[in-house]
Amino acid sequence: MECGARFTVGVLEATQSDGAVAIPHEEVDTRPVAGVRQILVVDDAPAAREALRAALEPLDRPIVMAESGSDALRMLLESDYALALIALELPGMGGFEVAELARGRERTQHLPIVFTTNHRPDDATVLRAYQLGAVDLLTKPVLPTVLRAKVAVFIDLQRHSEELAKERIEREFDNRRRDFETTALRRERDREQAANQELARLNEALAESDRLKDSFIAILAHELRNPLAPVRTCVDLLRAEPKLTPKMLEILDRQTNVLARLVEDLLDLSRIKADKIGLRPEKIPLADVIEMAIVTSKPVVDERGHSLVFEPGSERVVVVADPIRLAQVVSNLVNNAARYTERGGHIVISCGEVGELGFIRVVDDGIGIPPDLQATIFQMFVQERVAADGSGGLGLGLALSQRLIELHRGTLSVWSAGRGKGSTFELRIPLARSEIALPIDRRTSELQPLQRPVDDRGLRIAIVDDNEDALELLGALLEAQGYEVLQARDGLAGLALIRDHRPHLAFIDLSLPELDGIGLVKKLYAEEASVPTRLIALTGYGEDSDRELTKQAGFHAHLVKPATVNKILTCITEQLAAAT
Image 1 (tube, rainbow, N blue to C red):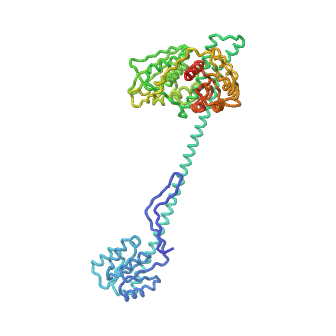
Image 2: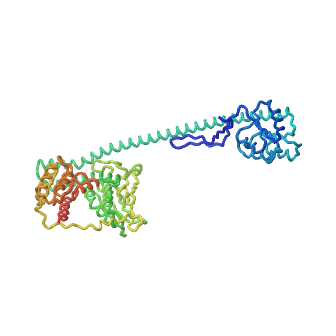
Image 3: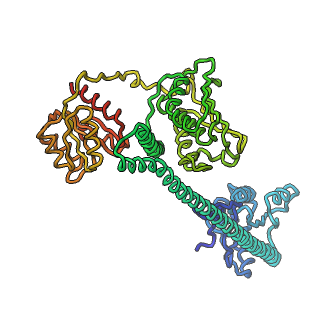
């Protein structure tokens, strides 16, 4: 390594997982101390140079000679020196100018300089010499012993200074290394602590999720058994006395609707979470939405003997909303109030305006909501079971309602004074005149009601389903409506039945043995591009992706099980009208 090499420590840096950790400090000259540094002699007189060489040789130091100031500056840039003897009387560039340029450069700004002169210096010359940082000013001829002694002292002082500088550098480096290691260890501990805290939080969240899922499964089993129990009883009664009474029909219809509602709530939450639920917003008065919800919730309210009052207010409040979805939310709130209010309670619904928002408020005098539950009441599966008379739930209704209102750019809130003091639920959505209201879906105004043909009896309808109970019951229903019914229990048989008998319509399940419903329709179109039969998918698969799949396969309609009589007959009417 060259004697004058330089290493600059500017930044201690360690790359961590969260970025570079930098410990800045001032630039430090860490050049190694040479074992024996040179002495530079600058003089244009050869005799003077030789005299100085002879005087300095006993110091056992390499001596470098320069004849001019420019030569001296070049040498100072190329190597490091222990001391420079510079004559003041130099041709061209004088000694003071050489010293001044040397002091202006980082490498030589601390170089010990001894000036030599041929004349006795005056005070101004001495002052100028010391201003340039000279350690001495000698008049020629210089006594060799004096010169050697002074130079030896200056070199010795420089050596001690360099040793002290070296020790200071090493000490500072050690201190900074310790600071860096301490900082790195502290960061590592902080990172580990943060990771442990996050892991603990995730574990706690997983444990809570498992608890909620276990609770949900238990509640779901209970809620499903509730409507299944009376259905089971009706079946047993029919075995003993095979006659359907109006009361039995009412029970079967109501409990089937309960089962369908439970399934739809689960599917709606899944659709919203996957961002697959669509709205059809239109201008509609809030009063109309509330009346729709009251009709839907009336059986639940009447069953528990409640008094339901609607206070529409004086103003006509118009919003842009999907009337079906908004009525679903209001119905959920009314049903919730009915379940959590003791029999014979009171429920009041009102609506109005607050600024640019319309509101619907549902107030009950029921069991109320504890303060600690109000903060989590809109989370999925959060509910409070208080009795075995149906005043419970899956904990899905409020979560579904809040998400539907959020899709309408609104809010849903709750307030209760506590146990036994009733509850107030309030939804707010932008008014139709508000700038943040949803855009109107023009499709809703373009829908025209289809007219049922005067006489559609005697038409052939095929049913392809591997579930014998569903097959026979749907066949009996359609025959009771005056249709001729053809049946098949697998895909291949269904394909042959439609191909050979060419029914006007065909209800086809998707999950079929031998050949599934999608494959049946594709093969049917492959054999004959123009199929006169209107093909209707009747299946338990009801997601948007399922509907798109049946549409692409060539189905004309898609019904989800369990489909009501009205939905089935309406679908038949629509398809017959579309075929004409």
